[in-house]
Length: 94
Image 1 (cartoon, rainbow, N blue to C red):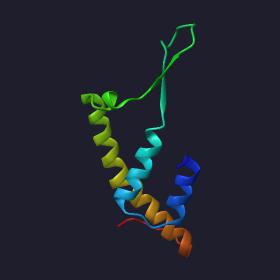
Image 2 (image 1 turned 120 degrees about the vertical axis):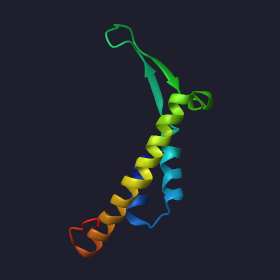
Image 3 (image 1 turned 90 degrees about the vertical axis):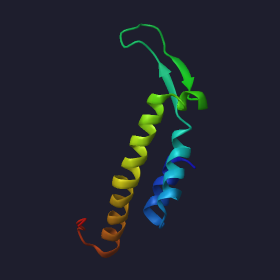
Image 4 (image 1 turned 60 degrees about the horizontal axis):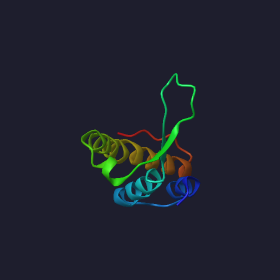
């Protein structure tokens, strides 16, 4: 799913946390990283993230952090914004 398709999905459809998380992770897996020294004159070397990269402790810590942020902050905010758009209110999470 392209990023624009994911945006439209979240804007238009009800979704469970698991569905939403899987859509975002699928999009993240398409990422490529360019390794380059900050002051180096040479072009960067492209590196596609692999499963072994994701198994590293630092990567696992980041994944855990983003899972929490996605499920506890992002998804509730999307849901409130959808309700606001539907009824014209300026919703407040209580």
